[in-house]
Amino acid sequence: MPWGCQGSLRHLPSKERHTMGPKAKKIILIIILAFFVYAVFTSPDKAADIVSNIWGVLVDGFNAILRFFNSLLNR
Image (cartoon, rainbow, N blue to C red; front, side):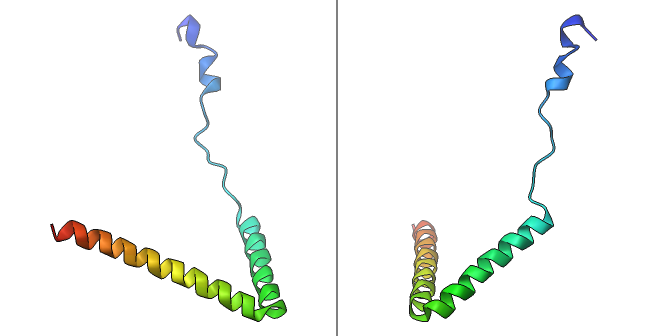
């Protein structure tokens, strides 16, 4: 090795990615599910409104994407 490259190999960025383990994902999923169950039992009307609003946003977004591609293809 050339004189200037001796220590540079140790400082290369690691190719490993730090990902969440399966236990952490399961715990987070259980916490989220517990929150939704709690929200439904404590206030079912608000929970239904939230689900309805989220569904409306998803449908509107999908329709906007369809309109965009239709306008691209119709030119």
